[in-house]
Image 1 (cartoon, rainbow over the protein chains, first blue to last red):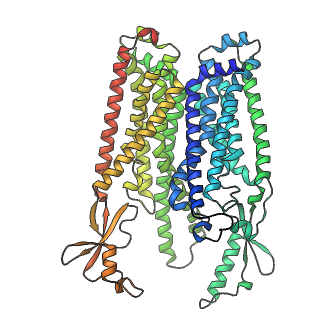
Image 2 (image 1 turned 45 degrees about the horizontal axis):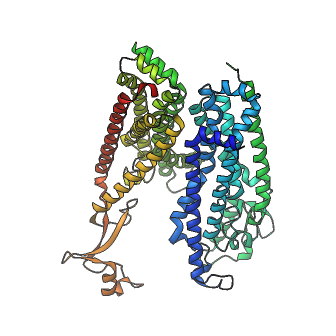
Image 3 (image 1 turned 90 degrees about the vertical axis):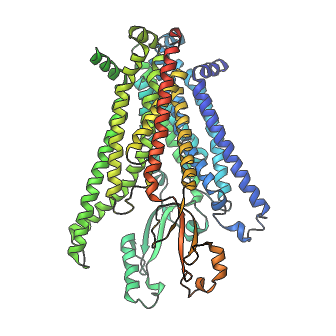
Length: 313
Length: 319
């Protein structure tokens, strides 16, 4: 394994250095911001007992003082899965095919699949470690930014396990696309397109991993920014559920009927929000991770088939 | 001979040219289409409201509102993409151009077959540079049409800096030239792309910071002529102008001097005074665009010159 790690380093030292510096740098910035926000809270006496202090109880306690750096750091971290995944994954097979060194390496390895496994495993593990460091730092950053909230699905893809899973998926997808196309730059372009598709696809799929339910007021407002809202409906005083447009029309009609006074709330339709409560974060993460895991296996299979099916000449 | 060399350049880079230049042209066509449709839809909706004369709109007109909303949402996305595309295209076309040949070690043979290395570089670079410039100029122009066609916020100014016009192409050319130089120095494709990407970010951050500092330094006090007359413009400070003395008074001083004016029944403007804002005058916008274009063209020329000089002095056996 040491020999494989050394080989991976020799072949990809530029890429590994770039990804490592970027990941560790971002993690360091995220930790610094986290500790800074926590020290501010500590100095204002914001322990659980002192939760009543006005300056320490607002949800957006750090928006003014730390908002811009936190958002900038979070935005940079959101690109980590795609940049790290492609920069490390794409050249593993593509460059060896482009430079025709694969023709020598494959017979020497005995089996192409063994060669692929040994060439892919060290960078895969390296990215796993680096992305985990970033994911933990980003998670702590968000917890520090919303100190008294269940952050649930807020910045879901950009921290914690989802970030690590996305990074691993993109590494294997990069390897697969490099193996299929066989040239680094076209594979990189294809990988950028695939990144957009993966990002958009997972975002669209997110509300569907578990069924949405009617959220209580506490789940929507009191818990902070963490719930994943999927739909808004209105419940009429008779108990019938109507869609948002119909409900808003009824509210407008009630106000228009008597412009001099507020309508009686009991005659008005009530807003009903559907979604996934922040407390179900772990359940969603498990299901999504399982699906991404299948995606990783699928991409790995594509890479294996592509390497195995390539003509030796 | 020239046709053969051009064909060779195309064969070596058809993927990148097709995807990057083709993608840019596609984006330009899409922006032009949205601009045209936005103008047509806005005119038709205006006619609808005139015909309705305050009454309900016809079903056709109501369906136009939905289409208009789609166009209004698409506009800022396309204009925003115009700011990013030059860097992506310049980076992915420029950085691999020389580095790939060095990495594959085909450069030494190509140099020995060519009359001179400069000629070899020119044949590789010029067709791409022309294609890139034309595509980005078209994109910049299409984006400009899109900004002007928007129903609101449709002025060309600091709000849409580098999202329209020839500056889009100049940014792409500068990134391309930096990529060429980095590719030659690094000699490996993917590292060259990464280093150029970092340098492009540094360049953008640098010119943005420099522009911000210049805008602040050249800001002038301009009397407010009406409500919302500085919408979309960065206002650095505000004060009251005393018409009698010509003195500029800060808010705090005026608040203390005229407490009643700022009370619940006050007008908010003391007698004999008017509000003024410290802003970079909007008419200075073309100067800032020209300055940035000048700096970026200088960077391009320097990077191109350095590439040529390094290429001539590189040892053939090292590629």
